[in-house]
Image (tube, rainbow, N blue to C red; front, side, top):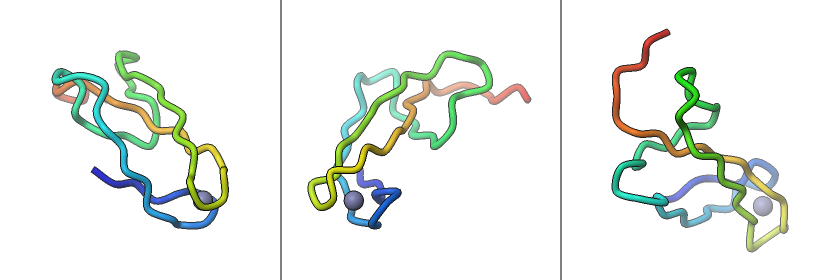
Length: 60
Ligand SMILES: [Zn+2]
């Protein structure tokens, strides 16, 4: 799975931390059960924060 660097738009390959957390979010899950990961861009070294979430109905 690829994300775009927030600074330069360079594509960064990311891997889910586990089989139960395969949904990528740009914001923390409102249920508070997402996993926060910092990804470093190869191109500009900026950190991009993403969140991995388990599959569940989003109760907003
Ligand atoms: Zn970048």
